[in-house]
Amino acid sequence: MSIRVRLLFSHDGFTLAANFKAPKKGITAVFGPSGSGKTTLMRCIAGLEGKAKGEVVVADEVWLNEKICLPAHKRSVGFVFQEAHLFSHLNVRENLRFGYKRLAQAKKRMQMDAIVELLRLTPLLHRKTTSLSGGERQRVAIGRALLTSPQLLLMDEPLSALDYASRREIYPFLERLAQTLEIPIFYITHQVDEVVRLADHLVLMKHGKVEKYGALTDLLVDPDFSLAQSEEASCVVDAVVDSYDSAFGLCYLNFAAGRLTVVQDQLEIGTKVRLQILARDVSITLEKQMNTSILNSFPAKVISLTDEGAARVLVQLDASGVVILARVTRKSAGILGLRIGLPVFAQVKSMALMGGGVLN
Amino acid sequence: MTIQDGLALLTTLKLAMVSTVWLLVLGTPLAWWLAQTESKFKPWIQSIVSLPLVLPPTVIGFYLLLALGKQGVISSWMNRSLAFTFSGLVVGSVIYSMPFVVQPLQNCFSTIGKTPLEVAATLRANRWDAFWHVMFPLARPGFITAAVLGFAHTVGEFGIVLMIGGNIPGETRVLSVAIYEHVEALAYGQAHVLAGVLVLLSFLLLAWVYGLQQPKSASS
Image (cartoon, rainbow over all chains, first blue to last red; front, side, top):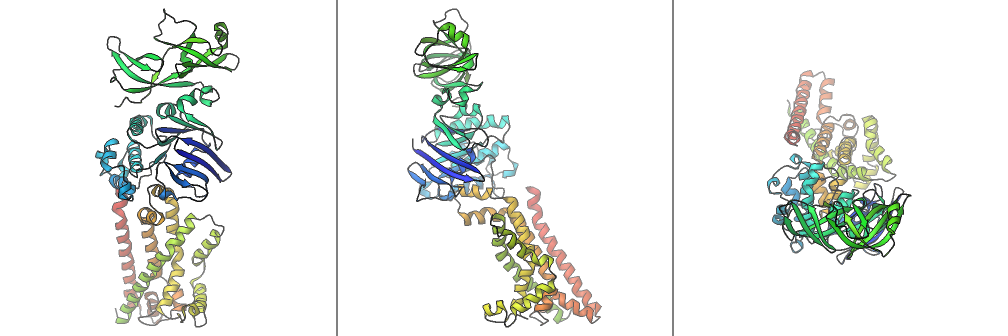
C-alpha cells in the first residue's frame, strides 16, 4: 500500500471525510452512488480544492499534510475528466504535448511515441480536436494526462459521456494501460460492470465517507457490501487459458481451485482472463454430481450464510482460497443442512469472461 | 481637410489607441477578478465599473475636472495638473470606456469557466502559464470585442472631452469636438469631410475585425 489518503473537506453543506489506502499498482475503482463525493475526493487528491485538509501521500511524495499543500500543478497527477476538455485552440498533437513539454527532462518517463502507439493516436495527431469523435477525444485526453508521467492517474467516469460503442472501443485501452504501465489508476464509476471488469481494488463511498476499501475479490463477496446484497451479486475469478477444444468450441481455464470450462472462441494459451460468476448462477450440492449438464463443478467449503429476506440465503464458499458467492433458497439450504465449515460442491451454470487480456 | 482637422484626426486615433492599451491592461485583471470572485464586494465593484453606462458624460467630466485640476486627488497624487492635457484625456477615456471592455471580457471568462484552467493545472501549468496559454487564446474573441468597443467608444467620446480636455490643437482637440465646432460655425462642408472620414474609418475597422474572426469561427 503506497498511496495514503486522509481528507477532510467541506463545501456548500457537503462534507467529505475520506480515509483509505491503495496499492501503487493496478486500477482502484472508486465506487458509490451519485452525490457520494467521488468527484470531490478526486479533486481534493489532485489539489483542485485548495481548502482540503488532511494527508495525501503518493509514492513517497507528500502532496498534502499539516505543513505542505502542493498546488495542483506541482502534484504529479494525471486527471481525466468526465468530458475530454481538450483545448480547442490546439490540435491533437499540441494537446498531447501541453503537459509533456512542461516537465523537466529527467521526469519524462512516458514518451510521445510510446503513448501515441499505445492509444493508437497516430492518425489523429494533426487533426483539430473539434473534428474528433467522443471516443477519440477521450483517448487523446487519456494520452495527454499520461504524458505528464504521473505517479497517479485519476479518471473521473471517463466513459460516462460516451455511447456504448465508444465505451467498447476504450475498454481494451484501459486494460492495456493497467497492464503495461506502472501507474496506479483511481477510476471513478457507479457502474458495477465497469468495477468488475476493470478494477483490482475498490474504494466504496457513501455520503461523503469511505465505507470500505480493499481488494476487489474480497469486497465483492463481502455480505455487508452493497454489491453482494444486490441482484447482481457476483464474484470475480482470475484464471489462465490452458487449452482450447476445437471439437466442442470450448476453452479450458485453470484457476486456484481447479479447471473451468467456458464457451469461448480460441484464446492464446497462457492468457490471463477474468471471469465474473453471478451468485444466482451458482448452485450447491453435497456430493459431486455425475449425471448433470453442468460442466463446472468444484469442491468448496461454506464460510458464511446470510439470510436475505424470507426466501433466500447468500452463501459464501471457499474454493481453495477463492471466495465464491451462491444464492440459494432458504428451503434448499435447510434441506442440504448448510452450515459453516460444511464441505460441498459448487456448480456454476454460466460465467462471463470479462475483457481482461483478450486484446493481447 | 485642413491641417487643423488632420491634426484632430491624429489626436483622436492616438487617444483611442493609448486608451485601448490601458483599458486592456487594467480591464483584463478586473474582468478576471469579477468573473472568478465570490467576494461580497463584487456587486459594489461591478456597479462602480458600470457607472459610466448610466451617468451623463458631463457628470463624469465634471468630477474628473475636479479630480484632475490643480487641487484634485489625481493631480496631487501625480504631482501635476492633468486637466486640459492629453494624459488627462486618457484618464477620462479609460474610466468612461471601462464598462465596454470589462463586460465582454467578464462574460467571455465566465462562459469559458474555470475548467480549462483546472485542466491546465493538472497538466503542470501554473496560474500565469494557464492564463497566457489557455485562457488568453480561448478568450480571443472576447478580447477583440473588448478592444474594438473600447477603441470605438473612445473615438466617439464627446462630453467628457469637452469638460476636461478643452480644445487645444494637437493636444486635446479631437475629431468629435472639431466636428461640433464646424457645425457651430455652419461650416457644413468641413463637418461633412470629418464625419465622412469617421464613418469610413469605423466601417473599415469593424470589417477588419469581423474578417479577422471569420475564418476561425467558420472552421471551429
